[in-house]
Amino acid sequence: MSGIRPIKKVLVANRGEIAVRIMRTCRDMGIRSVAVYSEADEKALHVRLADEAWPIGPAPSSQSYLAADTILAVAASCGADAIHPGYGFLSESPEFAEACRQQGIQFIGPPASAIRDMGDKTAARALMQEAAVPMAPGTTGAINGQEDALRVAEEIGFPVLIKAAAGGGGKGMRIVRSAEALSDALSTASREASSAFGDGRVFIEKYIDEPRHIEIQIMADAHGNIVHLYERECSIQRRHQKVIEEAPSSILTPEVRSLMGEAAIRAARSCGYVGAGTVEFLLDSDMQFYFMEMNTRLQVEHPVTEWITGLDLVELQIRIAEGHTLPFTQDQVSATGHAIECRIYAEDPTSGFLPGPGTLLVHDPPSGPGIRLDSGVEEGAEIPVHYDPMISKLIAWGTTREQAIARMVGALGEYDIAGVPTTIGFCRYVMLHDAFVSGGFSTHFVDDHFMPDVLTVSNPSLGEDMAIAAALYVDGHHRTAPQQGPGPSTPSAGYSPWHLRRRQREA
Ligand code: MV4
Image (cartoon, rainbow, N blue to C red; front, side, top):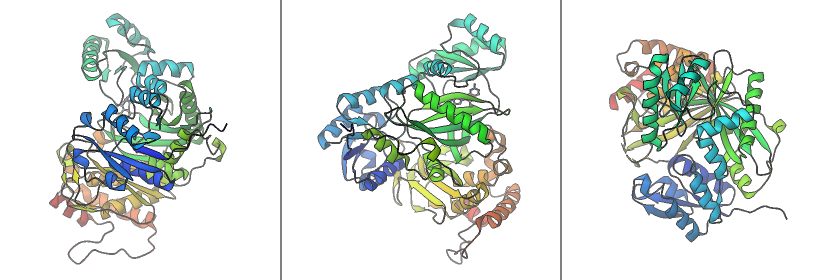
C-alpha cells in the first residue's frame, strides 16, 4: 500500500492574490481548481482563472468566505478531494480543518490539533518549553489574578508585556514598565481579550525592546520529516501589519540561522505539525532569539522564500497532503541571492494608511528581470470595502541585496496605479531609507522613521533620498538596455523623482 491519495480537484477557499497563486500551481500540476466567490467577487480574477466557480453568498466574509458549512457543501457537490484555505479566513480554524477531515476531504494544512495548540499562545509556550525552543522569560500558563501577575513580573523584571492567550498578531498587548502600572494594565488587557476573543486569559513575558521579527519557514511531511527553508526578515511593519519582507535576513550569522532553523523544526515537531508552517521569533540586539508564535498556514510573504530556494511551496503543500514524503532533505536545500517583497495596499500613507477602496482605473504593473508580481486584480476591477485592501505583492530578486533593492526601486517606479490610493510611494521611501539600506532597523522602523510628510511634494529631504536611489540604481542595477520612456510628457519609466511627484499629485 503506497498511502498516496492523489488530489485531482482542489477547492480554493479564498479570494484575491492567494487564490490566484494557488490555482496557478494546481494548473501546473494538472489539478482542477474550484473557486468560491461572494457577491462582491463575481468578476474577480480568481473566479475567471478557476476551472469552475461557485457562488457562496453575500459580500461580508461572515456570510461567504467564512461560511464553513456552505463551502463544505460546495466541496461535496463539485467533488473536490481537497480544500486549500490560503491565509486568513478559515485557514487557522481547527473546527474547519476537523470538519473537512470528517467529510473525507483533505484539508491542505496541518492537523486540527496543531492549529488548536498553536492558536492558544499559553499552550504553545508550554510545548516550546518542553521542546527546548528559546522563549522570552515569562509564564507558560495563564495569569491567575493580580498577585500572581506581580510575582511573575518582579521575578522576570520590568518592563513586561501582557499578552492575550487567544491573541496573536499583537491584539490585546500591554507593555508594563512598573509595578504600579501592572494592575490597571492587567484588567484592561484581560477585558480587551474577552471582548475580542471571548477568552480573557492573559500571560506575561519579558518585554524585548526594539526586536527584529525573523521567522523560519518550515515544511513537514506526514511521515515525520521536517525541514526548514531559511528565514524571512519581517521587521518593517505597521500596527502589526507586515509591509516589507525579505529573505535572507541581512543580519543573521550562519550560526544563529542554523540554531533558529533547528529550533523551528523542534517547534513543529512538538505539535505534530504537517505541511507548511512558520515559526516567528523575536531577535534582540545581542542576537538572542525568542519564540513568539507559530503560524499554521501558508503566509503572505512566502514568495521571498520560494525565490531564494527555487521551491514552489504550494506544490509542496499539495504533495504532502497527498501523502508524499518530502522530496529533499535539509542538506539538499540551498538559498541563492536575495528577495524582497513589498505589499501594495489600497491605502493612503499620507492619512494614517486609511483604506481607499474603489475602482482600479489603471493597473499597469512593472516587469523585467528579477521581478514577480502576485496580484488578484486586473485593471477595471473593484477593490471591495469588505476585505483586506491588498492590491498585490511586488517581489524583487537579485544576486545581492543591493541589486534586489535597486530592482525593487525601479519596479516601484514603473508601477502605475490610478483610481485608488496606494502604498507604492511609502514602499519606495522605505527602500531608499538609510536605515533600510544599511540593514540596521528594528520593528520600530515605521514609528521611528515615517511621518506622512516625507511623502509630500514639498519635502526637501526627498532630494537626498533621490540621490541615494540614483546611486543604488546605477551601482546595483547593471542596466542591460536603455530605459524606455513612456512618452514626451511623462518621465522615464525607471527611477525618476518626477514620476513619484506626478503620482502623488494624481492620488
Ligand atoms: C513581543 C515584543 C517584545 N517582547 N514580545 C507583536 C505581535 C505579537 N505576535 C507579539 N508582538 C510582540 N511581542 C515580547 N516578549 C514585541 C512585539 C511587537 C512586534 C513584534 C514583531 C513585529 C512587530 C512588532 C510590533 C510591536 C510589538
